Image (cartoon, rainbow, N blue to C red; front, side):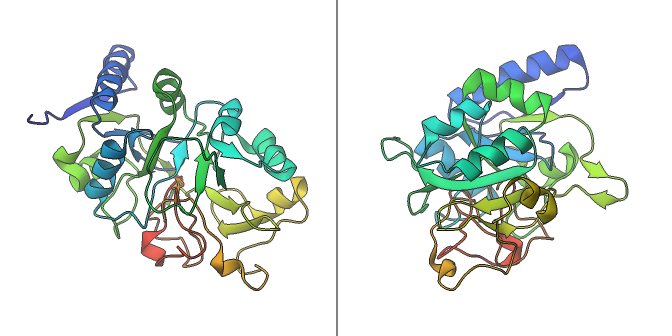
Length: 273
């Protein structure tokens, strides 16, 4: 079946309604959509459809070793997707969700999904964006990575996303520019909870001092104890969290979203969200 690409301006009420309807239909058909988030634009697919996730990875030009993070509609979804959620993770979620925090956790073993080579982890985030949350509440968790070809800068507007992804995406939902002043929008901060001590694996929009105000023991980027480079993770070589953000460092990964551990990747391959 030939993929017909549609584009909608969610700053217009009628177009937003039509766009969200079209996005729901596309996701149900295992196609990809581009949506705004509070960090950068993301490319999304049904997290529970291996075919849809494979389409997302192909659109970005990446393989199964760089799985995407998962965006969720509400904090309560955390326990349905992750297991052994530590108190520290719950505290950060209570403080920073919805917002630019991605958390790498051990995935529920009963889940029938295939995000790639996640080593049993999943990277989760609840975005602080009305359009993204409305779609997530309608369709459930979505595998989401930054809306760009792997190695390129993350898209901060719908034109940049369409220029890079083209007809690989069925529906584009636009909602203005994602920039802060003259600087590119920052990606989410990624915290890995799969080791003995929580550790930042990508420094993003939420500062380390703010994280430590809630969880004092958290390790900053580069402060991991010996051996943590062997952790499994779940961020799309994220998230989103996920991003191929040009500002991410080589130790920022996380993987089901990214791969913060055995999956630590090149700086240009870190994931959004």
